[in-house]
Image 1 (cartoon, helix red, strand yellow):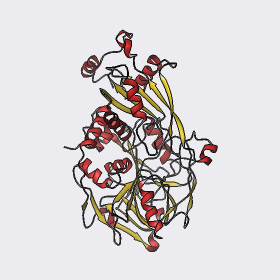
Image 2 (spheres, rainbow, N blue to C red):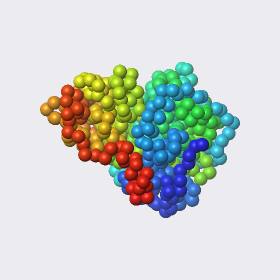
Image 3 (tube, helix red, strand yellow):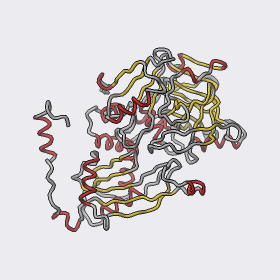
Length: 466
């Protein structure tokens, strides 16, 4: 039986201002891994026009969203996600004639993105971003492949939405096929949907596979979709809000996009970007904007309490690279630091794991630090990881520095490197394991062992909050 969130997991907040309150409250509650937040009665908007944030901000909420028991341990959530992804059988979407998303359809002069209480998430943002956990849907004009991705989307006017799409992403490649033919690209942006769809959209399925099929495989049943009048883009029948339109090339129409407080914790990119010319808005009664505003990467943000994608993909890559005895993979600060736990059986095991992790091909990633630790380290506890780094690393022997590509939102790129198109950075490989040659002679740790911890939690459940 699929579990649901308890009342203590969702906090309703009435009367929060979309510019002054919603972004700040979301961040403050995320910093302490508080409940999911449902903002309603937002000044200037009808009751029922809501904003929902921090929806996967705890391990329990992440587990429930993935169909797991809410008390599943953090590393077991990643392990379950990894195993499920490897065994996944794609399930295509199911086309239905209608759905709640069609309860309200705005076309022509009625098109107005201002009917939704889109927040200004950060004080320095260049606009109000309605798309932070969104689904951007396009269809390849050559083979009909439906792609679903996640890109930041800013309200630029009643019928204009801007998108910032990096050049190596699928939606940009699809749009360019239309542009080369002198056509605009049909597009739909969904800003409220099942979290499993948000998760699938952010994963980026292989070229040719629709993220709808991926989401169906994860759920074990096809996603119900429908086609809006005059469109061949499938949209979720149970979506909260869908913004439909066409994407012209930047040379034909563009708008200043940004800055936006990104997941690195900085305002970086701002420039002329393409727009969506909105021709139809569909939404349910009492629509909900699903919000996942980026915060400092050290915050267990609204959709990153468990680093599902970065940890599971790296884990899969390590196994494919022949790394033995992997006990777990975890990511900190989004994916700025990747931590791998192994059980050493040979002198080269730690370096093998480091080189394999650093060698994974990435699109838009910024993994700067790769750390390998022994199996006795709880990699889901940053304090435990730091303890290993502080006490098992000899900086003169345990560190290696390499060069690798980075992303355009990297705040450490100098103006000169940006101008030259040099998107590269250094990465650090950190061997925080006990030296294999004398690991059995390494001083013993004065930490209560896991068996005793489990017994203590059972005996003192009313006292200990572990």
